[in-house]
Amino acid sequence: MRAIYLSPDEADTPPPPFRTGEAGTLDIDESGGLETRSEVLLSANTVHALLGHGVVDELNALPIEGRIGSGLDALIPPSVLDAARSIFYEADRCTYGGRWEFVVDQSGAQGGVEYRVHVDNREYQAGLARLQYLSTLAGHQGLAVWIRI
Image 1 (cartoon, rainbow, N blue to C red):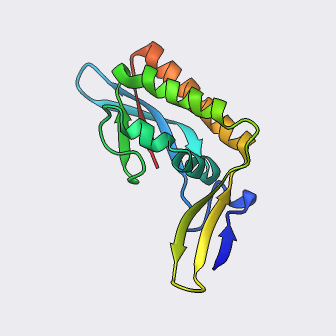
Image 2: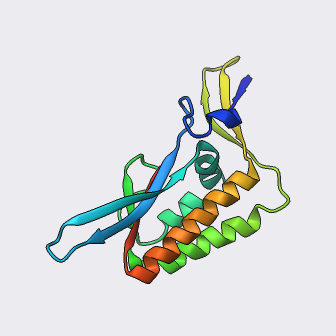
């Protein structure tokens, strides 16, 4: 099977089947209107590390609205932000000193193609730090966090 790796210079605008994501805050104003802000762009490196390390599964086990990883927005309500932030901190702690590589997708039978990402830990940790900051900021302001992967 032939392996195709995500190139570091493609991390922000990757070819399929590699994916990116984003996250931000969500505020409901007094009239019931929604105000969203995109505050964190998640590179393909970060997205596939979140998926590969099980962070997305842990977040989806929380009482959130929607499903992270579906390609649609999922909402992390204010009441769950402390638990989400703990997941981000634990994920950050677990990455030190390791070399990580994940299969993103496979196509074809014998002689097919396997799409892989070799995780750039520094970039992944920066992405986790942005998610930690976003969840802390939202928690202090009583806002929800939305995430799309």
